[in-house]
Length: 376
Image 1 (cartoon, rainbow, N blue to C red):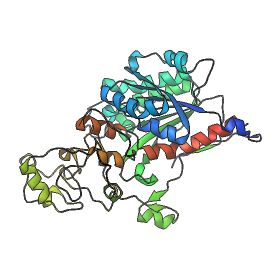
Image 2: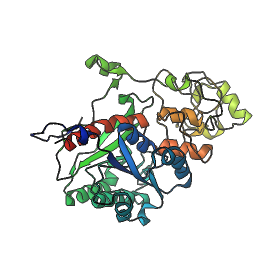
Image 3: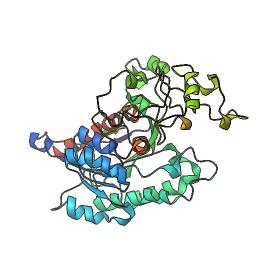
Image 4: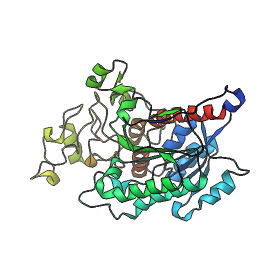
């Protein structure tokens, strides 16, 4: 694994007062707030967040603005000047310690075929992200995106990002593909993370942190690794009464009959008693309408994770798709976190989020390095 190692020499004795300084963060393309919640749990004060989706903003307000006091900008980031954040959220030369964000990734999705997504206008948002980096001058930035970002046909976007980083003299690591399974998240989810450090500081930082979980082969090589967290961890916990996200799609009688005839705990649509008309004549899309296998990590929670027609998203034993709450648990959101806007919007917000516990794990060493820097 490619590891960024930035060592600061001659560190002086730590000062308890400096260690208590509140570290500040900004979350761009914040969505429902998975990365923001992770940052808060890791010890950062998320002073500002930017998101334009109305339902995601309602979710963010209910859960994070009310709890942590984040200043939420419900605005298209292309129409928001980063200087406004400096004026409102970083007065008196207050610094930004950490800039987060995952620019909308559909243009880079591995589900796109041929050259689809090459000219997607959303792809220029990755460059807008760096405009905020260059203006806010955070000590560290951490960007998240899908692995499709690394495809050759998107090369010029990534090259432009690194050229912008070079102009600002940030030390930027190569893209790292991280699988959430390797950090205890109960789903197989690969995402790209890019970390950068401001040129005037040096951090005692080894990043990313070492994986904590692995499959049997990896555990034979490293016995300290824990087994991957199975999907059963999501289904074996009760749901609190009145949970507005304890809802799933309403299916037709014919589709419920398909689910009833599909073997439990990982059964496929091929094993059901009926072939759906849309699948006649071809053998593709093998996972759609399949049941989640509770003995292994679940498939990636996509923006359509509550829809069984979009993947292996049927409950292991019950005859319907997974609920929004179950999808949120796969993303390690706490059960008190409420998603607004209805079932379909909730699924979209959940699928777009950074898994909360993964975010915490990735941010802990950054927090410690910044606190040590303060102590010098």
